[in-house]
Image (tube, rainbow over all chains, first blue to last red; front, side):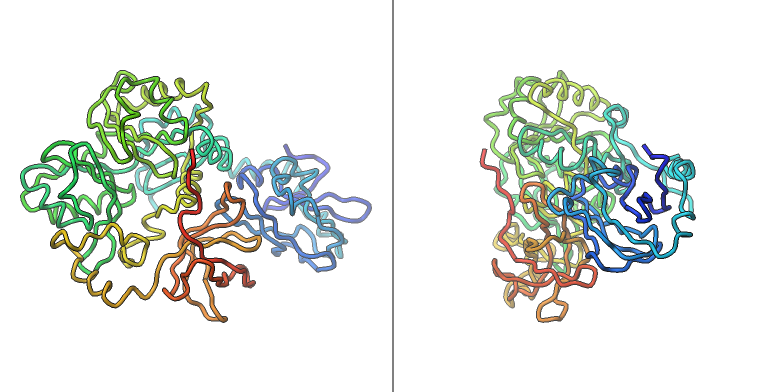
Length: 128
Length: 366
């Protein structure tokens, strides 16, 4: 399930444009591959993240995975629900499982991300 | 790079039907999970789970010289082992390192069955043959499959497919040949989860019939299939060691919490002299139980620090579904392994407090 109104990274993050800001999370593909998420380490509001560089990690029962920034910018909000309920990432990766809200510094970065169709093709390759 | 031929257990088709996700382990394609690691872990703690561990190795050592050969090879005392009973033991190198850990059953007067790790089966068979003297050694790993039925409901479920007196079996008891689901199997009251349970060894081709019968017999009790992912979180909570991670040829049983398996007074065995020396001076490092004091999960390879200096490493770690925090095992200098002591674990540039704790992390109270 890969909503058409989102854009995607090759590292399985999604990005949604909301009134000039960008909301970020991980895709269903990533959430399923991780299986049970137990901790999410995210940057504090006010910090800066950089396009395609790591901004945090997701800890699942058996492994740690890096999170890669879809866009550069300042972190405006961090999802407070993930501290108590990290499983939201598995249950609702595009909704309640969102991770960051970012004030982007370069609009071209969002436009350069993968479309839903391109992302589906990418993961089709990975699972094929 | 040409991939080595991948091996599959006789239950592969069943796993595919059950929606298993597979992983490569020791040259085998094995389920890592079905419904999910936490769900499977909880099922075993609360009800029962069924594991396919047919990739493990089985070796028969038999004949009039079998006892003498095994007494040489293992650190535990095989001399007092009754027919129909088993024991857990490491097998050591002359330097006191660990070749493998295994369970050894006496299945007849002069016949013993050894169950060894999948990743070390070939090494173990060669090692045993080299030190067997005139005892006969048979590798039957491809002839016998292995299923583990584990959890508080395991006995109830197994009783529906066998008339063997399984409730009379003590832990580590074994019945070399009984009928389960109409097939002759090896049966032991053993496991790797910290729960009550049984391990069932049918002939390789009988495994699907036994698996299906157990799954059906256990449906009403909530039996689920369980993969390697939950197998690891379960054994870690139970304080059980994993060869290749926690112990290997560079670690001794006196450093791991396996001193109880080393019976110096039974007579000579490979590694005895080296282990006696180590016992005299006291091992410099010990494997300790570790529990995270903050939101971090110990992982294999993470560095442990004290007063800013590296002092050890994590050998196993995972998020514990039962304790709801990160747990692990790691080697530390002996003086830092008192329960309650706190060291630091380096995680992505931060120092996270980690507390030494007694093993096991979890003990079944059913």
